[in-house]
Image (cartoon, rainbow, N blue to C red; front, side, top):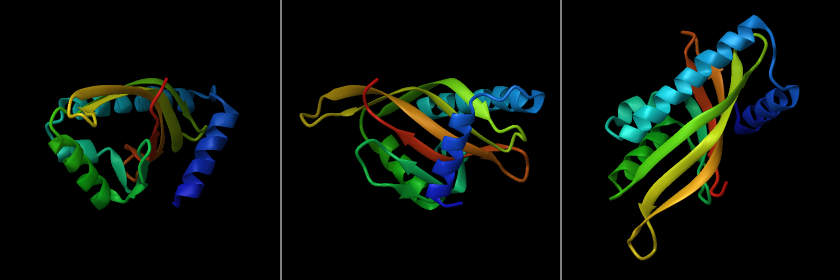
Length: 153
């Protein structure tokens, strides 16, 4: 799925609001748990493999103020470089999830914070917001297909 298609699906999910079907409700709960688990794993910063496992092979991330990073190989490199940066830390809190009625596509939103060396070398923490678009893979697991964040709340 191309980024434009993923964004369009995410927008349609957003516009349609939260579905009230039992399958969508269960999907939202599963997705919030998955996003929270991912946040914990990323915050620990110990396992690149585990962190990257939450993205689909064809995922695209859009870091605040940076170029698109597409595909799992490029995302892995991005994660490795981030974790190798002295003082780097990431954390996020999922706040909302919405799923399609059939439970195959969804999005989450929430707050995030990243700590990294500023221009003067001193650590700074930048707070922001994020949106992730998810789809179920063939095993039924949620995989992030589009990940975008900004700075500022």
